[in-house]
Image (cartoon, rainbow over all chains, first blue to last red; front, side, top):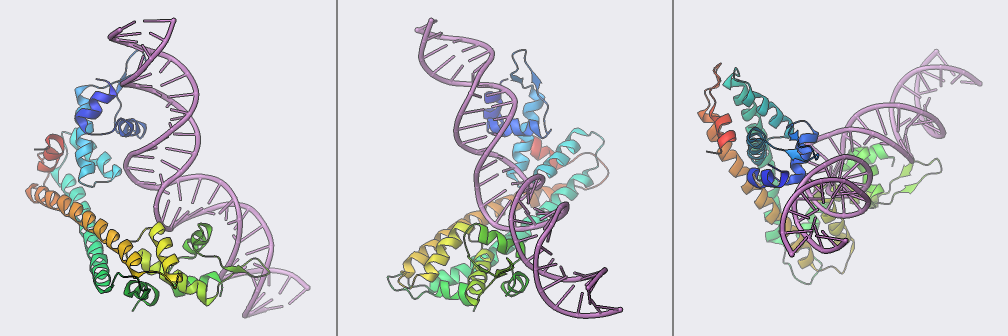
Length: 129
Length: 129
DNA sequence: CCTTTACCTTCCAGTCACTGGAAGCCCTAT
DNA sequence: ATAGGGCTTCCAGTGACTGGAAGGTAAAGG
């Protein structure tokens, strides 16, 4: 498989796949002409990475997960821990965004949004009141 | 005011304040010795920026908001539009995170987290099933 | 007056995960 | 022979800082 085919099948841009090789997540073979020659194994790994990234795991988490995936003697507890920590981070992020959302929604609500300069949004940003 | 005092009062790291000057958000005067000499006006702007950033506005949004803040002839509608667009982006982000959270929580739930290698999390990442 | 300590300055590099673009080689079809 | 598309590498840029080095300056203590 050339890069564009594997990109299509793994749902990743070709650029990203090259980048993943650069940082050592995959090691595709090369044809005589220098083109990357992807095996099914590479495709599986890339699909694994695409799904891990879609769940918001960092690249370093993905590296860990991929290593666990390939390690037949892994303990599922190790996988679970990575996932749980990530879940906690997502919860933090959601909480933070909800806080912002609440404040912002109130301010937007309070602003007339007309031609006059008076604006509760700016007042709040200026005074923090 | 020197940078450390204004940093303390605006709740921003000194590094960030220097960065904000570099990108043209503020233009503090200079003392003869080369130290930045912050006026109350600079402090107000920095506090404004700190609060805008805390609500998740991008630096470019902050630039716009600061310009509106300083423009006595602004229309509040312009401010409201920036805030509303940002609110919509936050909502998108929350929705995306909630999607991830839901999937992840299910997977974490399903994983025994013991010494055995069998793991629904890895299965899902590998198969997408 | 000297030294220490705590500021302040600039500049450069690194973060994270790509993304865009340039320059150039390779393969296929006409 | 040429046109097109795909492939390669390398370099630079994104956003918003953050860390650290190298060096000037100020205030306090001895």
